[in-house]
Image (cartoon, rainbow, N blue to C red; front, side, top):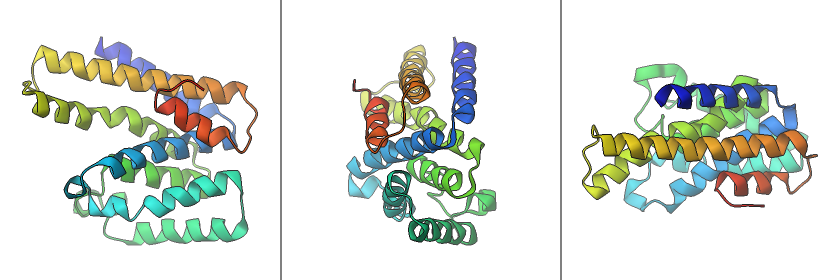
Length: 198
C-alpha cells in the first residue's frame, strides 16, 4: 500500500518537472497559496511566526505569474536572497531557527526559488509539499480524536489523506497539461488543489 503511494508521488513529481515553465510555476505557486490559506485559518497561537512573514511573498508570486513585471521580479529576487542570508534558511540545516520547516513556509520558499531561478525541482518540491503536509495533519487528527499515532487506524487515516492530496495534485497537473495559460489559470489550479471542481 505504502509503496504504491510513493510510486504515485514520484510519478506526479516527474510530471510537474516536465511541465512547461508557466504551468509548472503556476502549480508551485498554487500549492504555496493553498498551504498559506490553511496556515492563516489556524488559531493565532498555533501559527509559526516565520511563516507569517511569507504571506506577502506568496501574494507577490501570484501577481507575478499573471502580470509579470521587472520591478516585481527584482522584489522577489531580493526577498529570496534575504531569506538565504537569514536565520530561517534551509541551507542552515539543523541550525535554522524553529519554524523554518513549516509546510506553508517551505512551499512558499520553493515556489519563490522556482520562479526566480527556474529550478524545475524547486517547483516540484513546492507542489509536493501538499503531500508531505499530510503527516502533520494526520498527527493533529489523531491527537484530536484520541487515536494512537502508531495504530492501524492512524495508518489508514494517513493513507487516505495522502491519496486525497495525490489525486488533487494529479488532477491539477492534468489540467495544466491540457489548458492554455490565462489570467484565471492560477485560481483554477488553487480550486482544484482544494478539492473543488472547476
